[in-house]
Image 1 (cartoon, chains in turn yellow, brown):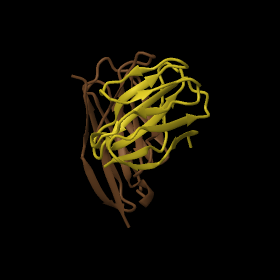
Image 2 (cartoon, rainbow over the protein chains, first blue to last red):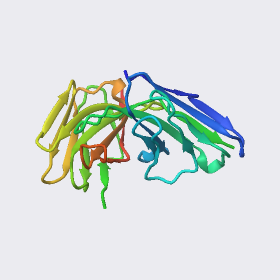
Image 3 (spheres, each protein chain N blue to C red):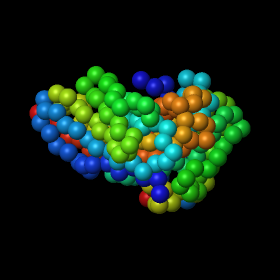
Length: 114
Length: 114
């Protein structure tokens, strides 16, 4: 069982609200990721980080932002939520291990924007 | 275009039966291929990882095969159990380094009936 945690697990909010999805890991991994996943669809990378003070945008354009002030913490923020942001958000981390970069996933946050 | 295609999209089998899930990819250059299991409402969990030189890898009742020439992989589940009901995701990495990216399939939704 991976030591990576996400809160909240479920969130229902109204349009225009600011939200922060929390992700933390206790494995000391440098690399962390945020994915977006819709039902029956593949995971899409929206943000990643190689370490403290490093953040990069992923393959899928997202209006969210991330920060990496501490190794173990990688929160995702939406300044003004919209119904199009309704989705499952998965956080992951991995070791700096060339050739076998297995990612460990958190349980996910199911976000619904009304 | 780098892609990962999985089949079937969904599968229903009876408890105790065997099944095989397929994954075809066009990712190049190829670094490694992973199979993940994702329970409903949870994050994916790694089952196996195979590099170019490996053509089979087992993890309990799960056996993955890889044919790097034809760019095909399969995941065979033996003596299925109710707890095997989940989505099985094929993930291909294009290089084993910090510059590598992952390509996700949409998954095969497996349901095991008693």
